[in-house]
Amino acid sequence: MGGMTFLTSIAISSLFYLSVFVFLAGFIYRVSLYYSTPQPLKIPQTPQPVNVGGVVFRMAGDVLFFRSLSKGTTLLFFAGWIFHITLLVTGIRHLRYFLPMVPDVVVWFSHVAIFIGFVLLLSLVVLLIRRIVDKKVVFVSSLSDYFVLLLLICIVFTGLLMRYAPFRPDIVGIKGLMLELVNPVTAFSLLTLHPPHAPANYMFAIHIILVFILLIYFPFSKLMHMGGYFFSPTRYMVNNPRTKRYVNPWDKEPGNLTVSGEGGQNNG
Image (cartoon, rainbow, N blue to C red):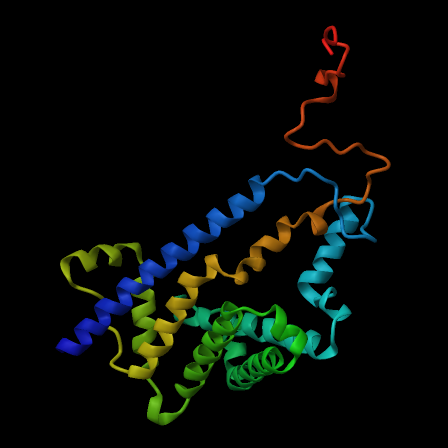
């Protein structure tokens, strides 16, 4: 293993474990905060269903069909929906690098990978242009919003470049690298400076390092809406305040409440 290849292998392997650890630990920590945060008020987004089944059905519509986005602009709805669907398909397709036996559905997605990739890139560019051109969106946008979009665009763009001959890496070598990295034993080999071999391809190195940056940044960004949505009280609360009393989690139980003046003599 050459010197430069050795350093690349060390860097990629180390960043892989670091990014996965930060992503999982950060994601679990943020979700635990969402779960443990008390909700003092009954604040469902009306008209909200009056039973649990209706709430589940409504949330499924938001997650699968972006029902809430349909109330905004047509451009936002279609660009957002297409982005999320193509990103999901791209993620499923990339499972072929982490599984010894590739399922047929993953193989099928490989046949439309280039088309899905370009559609994903186009949707990201549209969302970025919208943030730059639409004055209302610019007003509520922060630097982190542009950073995430640009980072995703760079990841998708470098991934598409690797489909073409000048930038094409050794696919078999990449799969071998990923299979070794997902093996927990490989983490200990880093301690002895024997990392799994990474293909000597600078475009692959740029692509995967950008992915690691995204994983590390994910738990600290607005991308956490992926998990936070399910803990939003306006979404999961049942609209039944007239039929069932809602108790503030940090209030005393109703039977323990003391009415002022009944517990002793007023000294005023």
